[in-house]
Amino acid sequence: MRFNSMSSVNGIGTRMRTNAKIFMLKGAQKGLRFIQGHPRLTEKAQNVLDTITPMPALGPELVPVEGGQLGHDVNAAVDRLSNKVSLHLMQSLGNESTREWGITDQHENVRETVRKFCDTDENKKFFKTLHKTDRFPRGLFEVMTESMGLLGAIIPEQYGGSDMDARAISIIMEELAYFSPAVALSYDIAGGLIPHILMEHGSKEQKEKYLTAIARGDTIASFGLTDTSSGTDLSSMKTSAVRNGNEFVINGSKRFITNATEADLIVLFAKARGEEKSESSFSAFLVEPKVLQGLSVHQMNDKMGCKGSGTAELFFDDVRIPAESLIGNIGDGRTIALDSLNLARIEISAFVLGMARRALDIAADYVQNKKSFGAPLATKQAIQKDFGEMRVKLEMAKQMIYRAAWLADQGKDYRYVAAEAKVAAVSLASEIVDMAQRKLGGDGYMDEYEISRIVGDLRVAFPGEGDNDILQIVLGAETLGVRKSL
Ligand SMILES: Cc1cc2nc3c(=O)[nH]c(=O)nc-3n(C[C@H](O)[C@H](O)[C@H](O)COP(=O)(O)OP(=O)(O)OC[C@H]3O[C@@H](n4cnc5c(N)ncnc54)[C@H](O)[C@@H]3O)c2cc1C
Image (cartoon, rainbow, N blue to C red; front, side, top):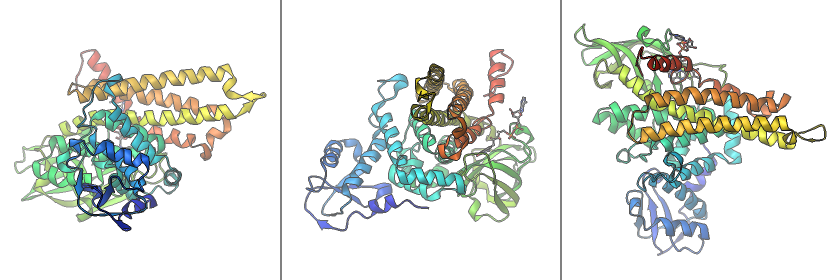
């Protein structure tokens, strides 16, 4: 499915020639031209060009060109350009600590960009359809990457990304989840977890090949950790990868793998055996499922929520992959998995925050309009008290999430803080959504108000990125000095 809105942007450039100064956006939106001083530009569009053109940081993104053409939709395109520029400039403009946890205007611009994209009648309708069809929205990811650089947000500029920080990614997750938790969940893996693994652990060649493809929007990635027979207990993993000449031969199965129905790339975890029999340990591989013999992918239907996030089972039957698919060395798998999950815990926390905000907004709107005993529900003190409670819970979650993201951005040890934020945010958000749903009475049970969908969507965050129970055990053990294993 592709959105029509992109076709109007791509259609720019067929109408008139001019000698005015023209700026062309390079990269994903190659070919878009913006003509400063053109009489058909609105004041707003002109202001955008006036503001951005002197900025040296635009160098790689926006360059003046001679000659060119202007289409009727240039104002909308400039609007999009301003969003993209905000995204791309965020890192180069710096992150002065002007607000709580160093959230700057540039971070807020990222929020506004994602919100504007999602908050259209067309896209909101599409998100609703997704919940019914449960089909992975590949076209949407292409459009969001082309127009906002979404999948490349965290990827360094040298690979075509925007080099954003953990706070920006958390903001993106929060806003996406407000509108579509399924899309946010897919983005979490394809645009967060996998690029993070490649950036931290990939070889030069692996980075060049895969980060560039993800940033372009050509590659949807999956994270294949959970085995059919084991989730939390990684030591019982049965999926194996045995070295045979210049290849590894993979056997085993995975389940619950997000994006896997559509994936072009899977970071696959397996017990690997090298050329020496003694060399046998938990390892990570880069697998391109669409070109492999012996791999079958089955969508897992009838799930409770996040429909459209491409959840699938994977069956490997003597699947051969090149030896250079190994990430790092044999035995690095545990470090790679745990390290990537630390950042993912902040992202999944922002994901539930977005859902909780949405549920609260739906409930607030409802109680302001629904009358009971002659007056809107919002005038009843018992209702007001519950909204006060939801507000406090929301704020607690928000502070913990952005504190963890800020620590990550400072290069500090954020592992335990991220785990605390995940445990707290998921519980708090779940309580908020439960309270919000009850404010709608019987309507809270119906699809029309979306809150019942949010109830199901949110549940994935309990087991996801480290089960809340397990994280509590780890935090408790660390508190008691019994064990330290994040
Ligand atoms: C929609 C969805 C998407 C997912 N996406 C992905 C993905 O993209 N990639 C991926 O690899 N996985 C994915 N998962 C899997 C998810 O990460 C696992 O479900 C999770 O790790 C828990 O593993 P499990 O389901 O095997 O449960 P188990 O590990 O069997 O745990 C079951 C319950 O027992 C508890 N428990 C387990 N061990 C202990 C213990 N020692 N002490 C006390 N309590 C314990 C757990 O807390 C949990 O409550 C996804 C799951 C879902 C539902």
